[in-house]
Image 1 (tube, one colour):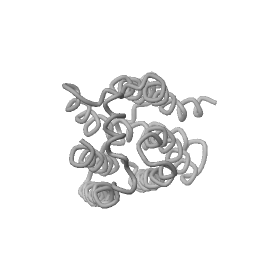
Image 2 (image 1 turned 120 degrees about the vertical axis):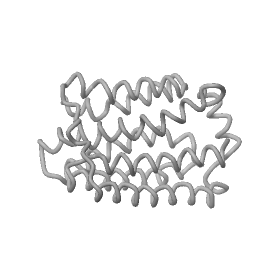
Image 3 (image 1 turned 135 degrees about the vertical axis):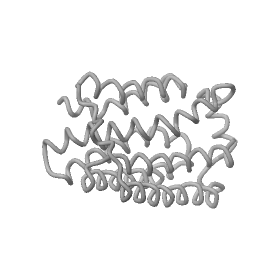
Length: 210
């Protein structure tokens, strides 16, 4: 039961902030507070998982560049079919993703997001799930619940019917990062890869949507 609460908690924070309050800044505050403080309260912040060697750095950068190309390159090519740009601009304005705080929110996405998400999912939660079962279970469960709250964010953005397709790469990335975590016992490579993936999303916003 405790693990289910830990798994569903980030999704609940996104739902409250984004779907209920419709404010990106509050969503970030609720979401990142959960990712940061739940492991701290549980006295299980996985600092020891942050070791990085040359192989891990190369894997993180290489996979991150591929994810960046897939995200930014793919949406640069297909956004006219997948996105309603005018609607999306209005939606982001309603969510508060504009004005003086815009750059700050982007920096949070690029700096805090990959670190805290990987510490939580491939560090803290992975250790909890791995203790209950095999690697496949830990990889699959952490990827599934990591994907769940991304679906809440994606549904309002993509044209009808494409949201569930668009979330598939998120699930694949979660599986991939979980696999790296299992093989390397470190999350530094996944943080690097994740950061470059998020940079692709920021570039889509800055160069296509904004």
